[in-house]
Figure 1: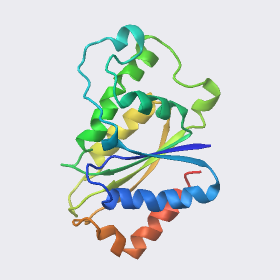
Figure 2 (figure 1 turned 135 degrees about the vertical axis):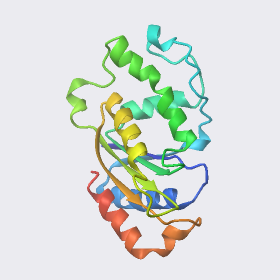
Figure 3 (figure 1 turned 60 degrees about the vertical axis):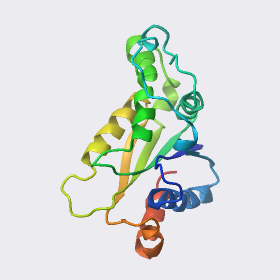
Length: 191
């Protein structure tokens, strides 16, 4: 089984990445293949809406997204870790999601399978969502809607999310033993 974990925060070693690492330490106990991607290391350009993918199913922009396309289609489990920005996903992750327009075109316009039919029912994913503020209504709703739509295009069943609020400073998660325990339990059900 291949697990792809994506850290989407522009800040390295912050709360969302820390929680992702705790989750991955639990997942690795199951003896599965794990690949962690730091999204900011890939240097992904935004979609320029050129329309080339509607003809070929491939993106004409050649950058870090080429590796991510392969990883997204090869994984059996997808785990996203993301901070919340104005009740949504950070631009680094949204940019990668938007670049999956090429996969959307391949699947829905060109009517080609992205993964083998027998793998579609076996692929699922989840998200770890972190917010600095607390008590706001619908804090995670926009992000969850976007992730579910993206996962659907990728033939990945969105299973669940682990969301937490009130992590204002960079290492707040590390000081919350209950939170660390809960994210470990959450990730144990991934595989």
